[in-house]
Image (tube, rainbow, N blue to C red; front, top):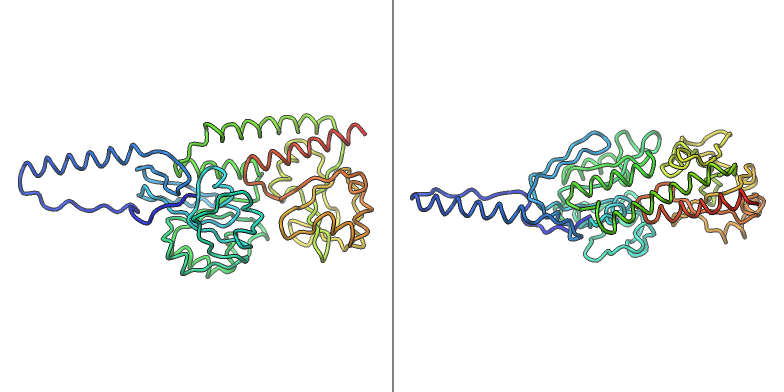
Length: 350
């Protein structure tokens, strides 16, 4: 996301009546100079200003096209979208999410200076502060199926009215979060490029190359290993067993040849089967991918409070990997892919 100043939002002042030929020449020269200055400023940067005099146009994953006749695109983003764009050098003017920005695990390690917090609990958005920031666009993700809170619901909005009110302030851009994570990251890359970021050079190109190599290595390890892999979200009320086809990360893993286990019991949603903790050892995978988002249970708590957790083969053998359901940037995703590659190699050699 980018910080953008509040001026220059695409409006232009009409040149007043010109009474002399000299006046016409001067006016034309000034117009040419102004155009030349605008077109020369083409860097992306992290200031929130795309720095381009070109019209911004982007079609989101709902098929909705946003076109802005402005060189100063001010962005407000839901925390997931903020993380994705900030890893491409795009900084928002405001973020809304599920936790205070300074304690938000999704935003860990990112430069949050100068960014306004517009909501620190899920579904909370301070509309007056949002309007005061004068955003040009609002960026978030969208979940299909029963992942949407209401028809057409964009993630982070608690009610349809709240979403409609926000859309009155600025158009909403939504990236589909129920497609493979590799595609999600690429789509945020497309948006970053439309906003003026050069993601094909320097550190961004290196990150993509590292990711591509990690995927190649994972595919090779998966081809040699018969190890079964299960993804779970452990919570106080139950252990939730993930449906691989429903989540962005696990879709990638299936496509890359990883032997992902599917829940065979009754589903509580299109995303999960729910197991009481008494039955948490129903599945016995070789490798367990554990949801590590901020509000899920940690390994120490699981081992001490839920004895059946320790009855799972993967837990006994220490074959645990991290899972976030959807990866939003190449560096973090690459780290988790490498971790799983190591676990597959370990399992196949044991």
